Structure formats: C-alpha cells, structure tokens
Image 1 (cartoon, rainbow, N blue to C red):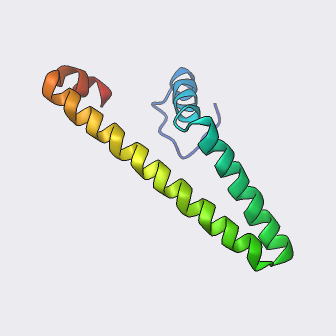
Image 2 (spheres, helix red, strand yellow):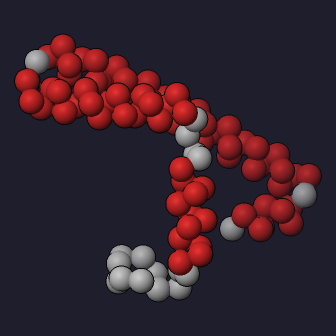
Length: 93
C-alpha cells in the first residue's frame, strides 16, 4: 500500500469498508445532483455564462440543505439509540 496522508494503522480491508460506506452515504438522486453540479461548474468555467452560474448556485445550495438534513437526522437517531442502548453507540466510535 503506498504511503499517504492516512494513518498506517488502516488496513486495506478497513479502507474497502470505508470506501463502501462512503459510496452509500447519499441517495442516488442526490449523487446525480452532485454530478449535475459538477457539469454546471465546468460549463460555467468554459463559457463564463451567468446562466450556468445561477443554476450551479441553486443546485449547490439544494445539495447543502439535503446533506445537512441527512446529517442532522443521523445524529438524532444516534442520540435516541444512546438512550435505549448505550453500548451500541460506543461500538460506533
């Protein structure tokens, strides 16, 4: 495994689990919006047309709102689980 900024304690198996987990963090429609956002940004950079920039900003803000809502609901679920079974929460760390 080549040297990187990650700790040397991470095994290749653990990296696979991390990559798989990150791939499923966002729903398919949100991932498509992220791809669309990237395309809009590239189009804006190439053309410098403000129409692409305004579309990009709307999509960017929409994605930000969705991801923050998702993060907030996950944190609330973890907090509720901590009240029911604290040992399971400690396993998440």
